[in-house]
Length: 213
Image 1: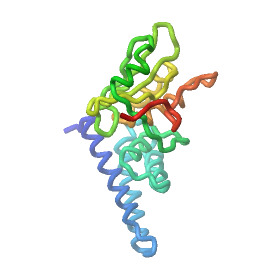
Image 2 (image 1 turned 180 degrees about the vertical axis):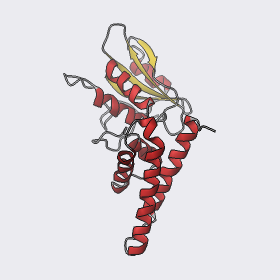
Image 3 (image 1 turned 60 degrees about the horizontal axis):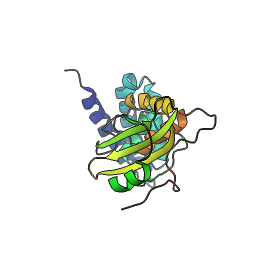
Image 4 (image 1 turned 90 degrees about the horizontal axis):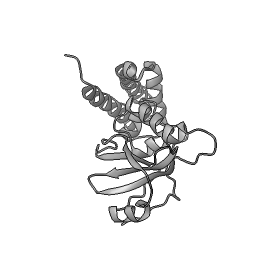
């Protein structure tokens, strides 16, 4: 029986978690344990690479190296490690926090923003319940990129001037890899794909607009 993409994703996540656990259990004071756990970690990482190589269209060893490099950089969440395996983590990515606001505050701040909402997926985030949308007017190159959390009924702005082509390029790259990418990582992909000439779109920073309810 041929595994479905969902089966493949679950297995990849399990293998990545096993690689992470092997890393966490390393006893560096015990040389035997150290090399045993290190070999375990590498075996799980290479198994992940072999599993994903056709889907990601990348060399299994490169996929495994991305996983082990992330682990050595103290990345520990399965979501971030999975994104690293898929090659979706920009080199300059740092920890970011979205500023979530309720529907009333979102409408007060951005309800006047002209344009039509174009949806780019409904299953983003670890709970697979976040929608990413670009509000943009016909003929315009930039618009409001935001994420909506259906569970908490909250919004977060990813960029107030996201380039349409960059969003579409980021979406195409994301759906070839991690179908449940963290929205912050999606915003980083948008920033990485944006044309260099004078565009300001990108992932939110500590100064990003927004208030907490």
